Length: 257
Length: 255
Image (cartoon, rainbow over all chains, first blue to last red; front, side):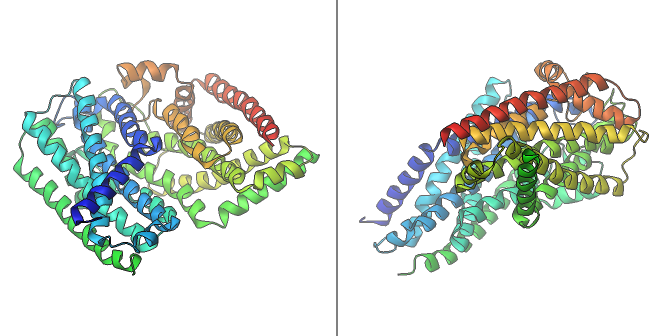
């Protein structure tokens, strides 16, 4: 392990291979969001008849959801893999090598970001086959992929932080319902302005996940909406900075030499 | 009689585990409540869609689905416990100790029913507290709970059959995913008549659609499709009891 770049590349490769070799970690994040998309777009199609609904295709409206679900799975994957390394003693053995802490984190998250981009490509292809046309065109696809990479990095770093703090796969997995709550109490199934229950609309407005969804949705059904993009990218950047900072603080304690 | 004592011991142990372990108890109570909140609160505007004519409102409409979902997943969660018992080796010791092993399956099923009854009581209390309206009489509402209890039994027997065949926690998605699909391929958000396209075709042949529509008719106070719903639920329970007992025999044969 000569340079930091080599160390990052080695660990990222290991992270990608480990995910790739575990069918549950690869197939579930691809298939489950698509199943939920199919169910919701069939079941809630009638919602498009509501006055003020932004599109005639519920599939186009709901296609934003898998991107955020993919981020949840990224959190779980990053956290679970790192926690397993701690539980199995792999991290302790790494601490005996000259590996830099930053390289460990970057390598681990590199694998998660790669999976996030593959997931995003899959969701875009499935959406296109099902008849969704991105209002923002080819440029929108590129922005979507960058956004998918950023949300995987941001949420993955949160998962890594929890893993480094607790060193327990069980604790990381218990986070899943918490993130699921954030997803469901958002504008996931209906635009915020059409939510008639006041407290739910307020909760969805206060929930940052709503803005992540609306950022993706704007590229799919509106085109280029500067405000939605700025809010989405701004929030994901803040989550990434906070997550990476917390993980960086927790890392030296785990890599005590 | 020996079956009863085995069943009682297995049920007591399962319930003791669930009710003394917050990491098992809290999700069991929180998840249905959370789905109820997300669906009834977030999607209440669906009530304004043309053709939606459920008289008791969207909260009651979604309550029935969430109640049935909690029943089904209560059974699946018990299946997770069975798989865990095999992983830890407890189930093998149980197989050695039990004079009548069918009692093991009955015990797990009884425990699943008891733990779901607690969830159902909690969910019902919350639903009434937030103003759910019910049009049924003193017979209609209990009939809904009996229907949900049969769904719970069918789900636990399905999960038990899987757990006894695979004997690993990795069987979790195999237990969960089909139940999830059957639940969500029913008319979850709108009545069957308002579904269109492929999902309508799937919902028509889905046995849980009958159960869901009958459950909603109980809450509306005008029961319909009752015989079909009970036949579907009982049919599933009988089918999966055979599946569970065959699974038990495979677990016995595996040693």
